[in-house]
Image (cartoon, rainbow, N blue to C red; front, top):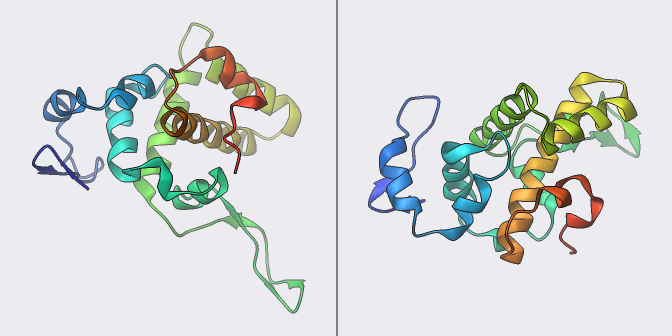
Length: 168
């Protein structure tokens, strides 16, 4: 968790130091690629890199989504549901917040971008703003993870295609 001699702290608590992190982040090529995704920016790139540490920690994107508090959890007993499906409460809230702010920044831009297009397509499919937002947040996280895991540059056209998912 410690990179460049300073501890990664909560963005919400004001402990994140953007100037120092940008200078330290130049050594990590994945950070520059993350920042190319609309809405992510330098702070989101560094937060994702610091908390994930290495893409090999997660065998698949579903495990990563759970760590980011974006997975849907079912509770059951003896094969019978115990309640409503809801987001898993385990994991790192900073990554969920980072993906939310990336979604918010990209969707509220005046110009069209791939994140906004994905959100609109998801909204047409689901007819629910919350589900469309969560789908888009998951897509942002999965795209960042795939870029890092494969070592490839970010390509906007792959954000809209289902082929950018990393195989298990």
